[in-house]
Image (cartoon, rainbow, N blue to C red; front, side, top):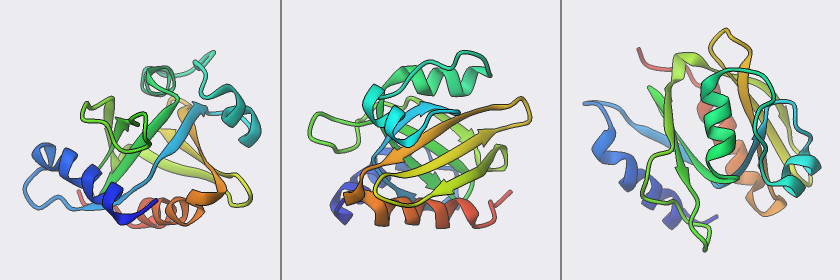
Length: 148
C-alpha cells in the first residue's frame, strides 16, 4: 500500500479526531472472526462471530475488507472501496485502552488478533504478502502506549 492511501484514510477520520489526537497507522485488511485462521479468513472473507461481544460481531459482519486506522487514542474501522482505498463511512471505533494485540503472525499471509475489552470479544485482521510492511506498522502503532 502506498502512503497516498494511508494519507487519505487519515483525512477521512480527521473530522472525528479529538483535539490533540494523532493518527499513527492505517492499512487495508481482511476482517474475520477472532478464532479464524489466516487462510480461512482470506478465503471466507470475514465471518460473523458465533459467540462473543457486539463490537467484534459488528465489525466482522460489516464488511470483509476494511481499512483500520490507529490513532494514539482510538482505533477506527473504515470500509475498503472497490479499488482498495479507504471508504468514507465509519464502520466503528473503539478506545485504544480497550484494544489488546493478542497475537501476531507474520508470514506469507500476516495475521493480527485483536481483543476488545474484557468480554472475550475480538477480531482477526489478515494482510496479504503485499501489505506485510503495513501490517507491521499497525503492530508498532498498537504496541505504543495509548494516550488517555
